[in-house]
Image (cartoon, rainbow, N blue to C red):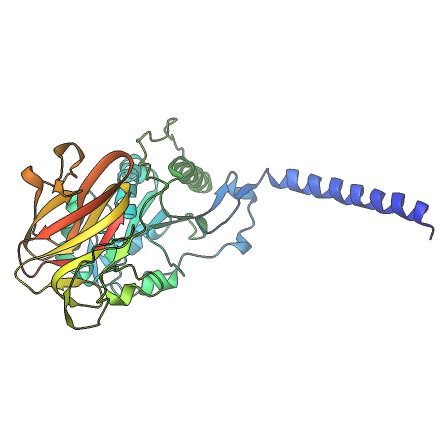
Length: 373
């Protein structure tokens, strides 16, 4: 075939295919809208449940390997799961990203629990102390959580969902199909719209009337700085590929190490003084006193600690100014840590570079991680 005939013919075929494809796409919008999936978020929002082919959706897995139940019992929870729209929130109580999502989740519970929404907090711990049901109950009380929370201490339910992140939200419709999947913080209005859509779908299928609020939640969202120090771990099991200890002695698994602080220090590296025991998830102070020095970037600094200890906080060689002290810091830069959790020690309006120094005045102090905002 001659090229002058072949080219118009090919162009004609392409136009026909494009028109047909566009027609199919537009007709599909009558039944569902799919929002693209990537590493940070994936969403599938429904607009008309009666027209959806659910063969492409997976069903939410059973809750397995649960060691404890808070605000519920196994039988009551299963009874509620049946025929509810279920938001599964995978979280852990010392995770700052998880903590920042809780005001939204608790508000959705208050707003939609009577209309068919069931929220289940799947508490999948990162550190050993987060497996203690008493610690989790204290966190549940602190953050005003009244919906069911299950302790997934061996991460069996985490694995059943195929999860690798904190926090992560899955929403299943009233038939148990997962219709929404979001990793991390953010997209709160989009998430609430999905809740409303699936509640409407449930109501339509049951033949009941549903009156949904017109306004979506309006809570000021935390805005972490883009340029900030990454999370820093003190346990040798957590530092593969992200070893940021600046002291020359380095990590020495299961040993008591006397650390020193070099004169030259690098941003995003932490330095230790004193004798510290190297543990899988943390470091514990063995000597009578010690210190941690960290040149960092960010507007918020948090530490996850355990043990009963007195700390003093310095910024750039001086006792921390009350104007930038975190909510857990008292007068004269003092903190008394007494329960295993996250403590907020620095809070500034914008991202800043400083050198943080934590003076530890009590042996037995245990530190797990620094997190930044």
